[in-house]
Length: 274
Image 1 (cartoon, rainbow, N blue to C red):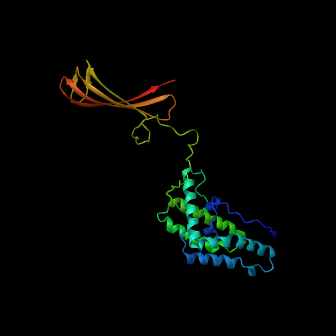
Image 2: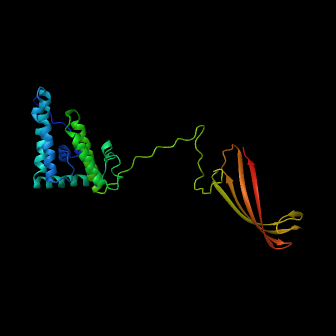
């Protein structure tokens, strides 16, 4: 960096919308004054010029970070009035974001994965911040990356506090079986699966009378000239057979002549179509 080095930019998480003083000091949004003091001292020690003897470029970069980021963050968070106004600003910003949430509002970095699904997400948030904070100032090369991860955690915390429901990552789509698309049931169709897992996409119901002049083997007896009322409960089986339809029917029967009684019939049929 030169003498007029720009202030490093933090472009992820809460820092996309407001300066994230909490992330800069590596402390959670719920930090008390003692925790904020520890965060400041950790940053001051890591960026002290004595740590960059023989590295003038690193020393200048550390000086810019300390003067432009760390000191302002400490000034805001250690003064009660300034911190209260700053927290009110963050709350207002989140409310406005939720009025018309951008599609990429919820952060997607590794630091926040699974946070919204945790039953104790507030405790989990603090634990994740503290873990990252231990590594934050260990290297200038990764300092901004770690700070951005902390800022993503802070954004996630504020969104969840405001009642935002983070959408889980979509489940991967199951590809159709090779050789063709997966069969689709008829619109609105319902039915039970047979043992061979054939869906029942269509049903037919019927009721009618019948009369036969010949002899027939049936219950309750073997007789001639039978007549009665017959119902039909049938379905077409959706089998992957080209130009072939298979149907199954059950026939509950009530015989009126030559004697009265109940019976049951069935039919399995095949139809061919072009």
